[in-house]
Image (cartoon, rainbow, N blue to C red):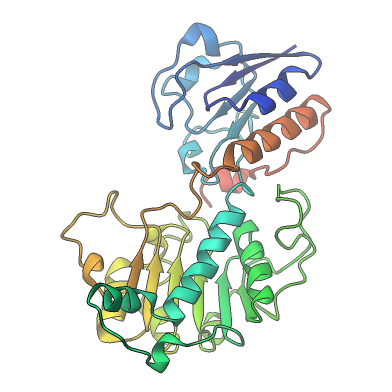
Length: 337
């Protein structure tokens, strides 16, 4: 008998699908939250499956846990729990956010290219300006995607549909990927969309031809501060930077200088260095920056709960059957590498 403890909001069809599986008992917590706090030890101590965003602060009480399914794509909340050494599997919610974040990427590229921020300012000031700056097409431009997970793959598919060239920089190359959740028809499971793939050590070649740099890599110890002055100066001065990944992947001081001194044309930022971004932060006032409050892949999307529970139900079936889990995190990832 598998005992499942659920600390995420219940999606009725998903809960029904899991509860209908043979040999499972589901205990759904009445007050799920997206934060670390203590959970009733008598309810979690015998669970061998935990479905949560953050493990409880009294995780040590979970003596029987064998697998954690996260409701987030990020997994830094698992660092320091020594899961791999304890033989505990973990999987995340990769794939749930691919479609909305890729749509954000495309929207930002169009808005930056056409300088929508200035057009809105013109509208508010009753200014009639039909300058060529507001009529730029992104067709034929080059989108560079740093990292090629699910978000990068769906962004590549949409960019190709817009007639853009797609360049990718990735440590591991581009290969078929069928063990990670994807919305049917979305993404690039066969690895066919990039026009050109660059590998580690080819960053300068990758950056110098871009119209847009899209950060699509997770935040780890290896990627924190990955993009700094050297990388931003390698971009054409007409290029834009999009960051829907994590703020600290780009060095803040270098980004601010790049925007003020004109190393790049502008940026669209959905992830930040402080939450919430304080009112006196200079990024609020840069005319060439679009800021959004970390909503590109919001869990409040009308499709999020269904996708999340689809991952979980599928993984429960795999776990019961002794099969490899979707979105399985490697020991290296769990160690923050």
